Image 1: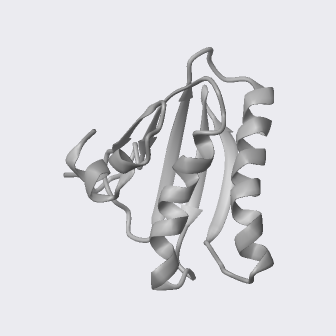
Image 2: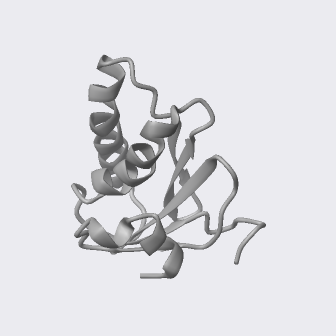
Length: 121
């Protein structure tokens, strides 16, 4: 676990895959999800379902965890999270909740947050 991943609390989540934080881009987060057996449309759907199941209870309570988009990017799954409208007390839930939801999907090799970020450390 890298220092920024630890700072964000990813090291305390008991995940079966590794998470690394490559940089920061303000209020936006891109989660690059690499799969053990390579990309498949079925795995994309499974990840999308896991993310939607995580977000739904918050939406039902009218708690905004940000704009989320799950898509294919090259040979990986990309999850885009924009926390611009998220209340400060819910930001950690949104950021760590994405990786917690991914822990329910088998076959993930690793996740890199903000992999192609122009501003890194």
